[in-house]
Length: 349
Image (cartoon, rainbow, N blue to C red):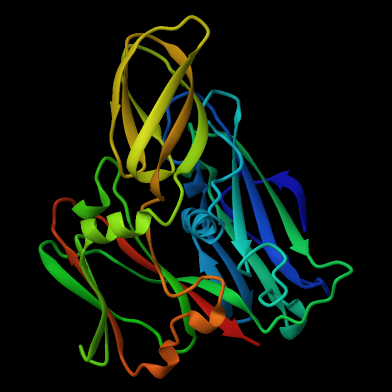
């Protein structure tokens, strides 16, 4: 779809989806070329928004971090490329837009022929992540059906539905849409160095003015109950600590993170590592190159709320039959941040 091209200047790249073949997945690769060793933030932040649109109709709309989190919860697989924060080396980030339950799902996929002028829009800014990159490149692929010609009934539409700044020690209520069947919802809340429960500590989902309450739980209890259904998010990271002291390391897992620090070359000691919210702090005794394995839960601070058997559309949450669906979150006020609600829905042709 797009051969590797320069993305050094912040912009929105628009690509016409003028294929006649049905699309199962779109893969976006962004390479930020580091200009130093000091990390500014996670490189997934370089992709600020990805949209699939048909005129004014938005078929998909997510940030880079949300795409990676949703891809993990869809597939159970971590991002394929390692993070690399070393000078003059590329941070290669992959973002998978999944239109079905799995790759080459014959029931759910994106059929460009059903739309008038479908387009892919990718907004990027190399300065937002990595180690102060001074150059960048963008590549896009489409995984399409070739000889097999399926007849999909629709596709999985995912959007950031709502974003807000919480009020400390208060509840925030959001009316959720009832236009399409709901497969899963992500609640994203992340501040570097803080736990998810420092931002959100209660979750309640209720129907028809509290007539029915599907979920009403303390967030820590809910997190413990759902995390067992998913594997660790695991990634390999190469980086360098330029001197003695404390150093930030930006990682994908947001909760219950674990680091295995492996020195490259002559080993010098490191003292400890700690932190959550997508950032850990490592204490080192001297300059050192590390190859690190990072493990943990909740990539990019996204908590999944899955409805029914995720492989069976008949078992998903048919909110079209619900008159009023309300999400209530409580914010303890431990730290200020932003809460975001991402919805993945079945949209039929």
